Length: 284
Image (cartoon, rainbow, N blue to C red; front, side, top):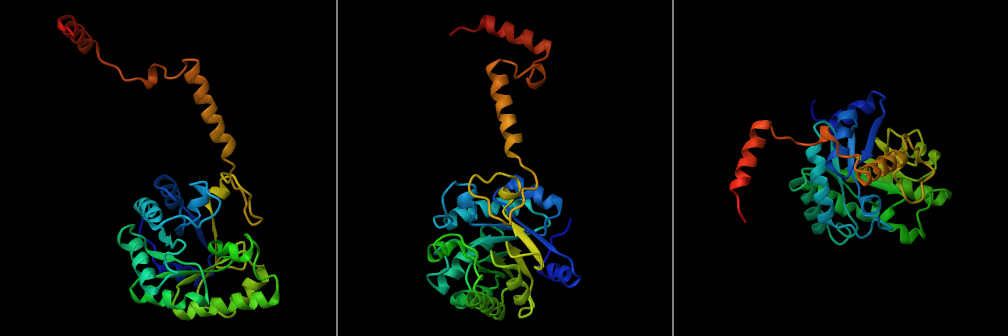
């Protein structure tokens, strides 16, 4: 199994193939995704809600992200791993953006980084790219800016707003991003956007005309304990399966059914007798 490159992603897109992206936050899930053939894995700041159980993505730190991204990178032999820049790790200055993006590469062994925002963050995007780090853009709904929107709302339903999103796409492509994630926008806006940019466009709630789709792994497995977005399809609901396994474990431990002989370690008869002899000579 050979490691994919950004060039490989471009080749697949040019051949008309769709790219499959997904989040992962730990080694076992990332290993399963990689073995299944996922193309790109995003270690998303969504870890703050999906794993840490918080209400939004704003309080996750670089240390949190690097810790989990390193585990994901270690699991991946094939997939491209992208680290997601947390809130206020790049907005403050170009220098901060470069230093923090560098941590994803040097410490977490990621292949690229992603950051939210359009024309407001062109300097940061260029600075990171000039430092030799590939950047994925993210426009449309920006979860780190949800206070600005008054919640997690679809963006671009009004023509004027849709135009601004398309302008952002054009700007981040010119700045050098290798791909764009478009989140929660009407499908026709995505279709129009693709007429103005040549790099891959990956959607999350942005319709079927994208070059690929990205989704939060917890969502497709039914492990979302909050509101499920309209665009999420639960491919396999693991909640009842996991709950049943835990309940069965509790029941068998309580009734002394588990562990049975097959789950125990055993001494051979010779060593048992030796131990018994030793205990006869043993005094406290």
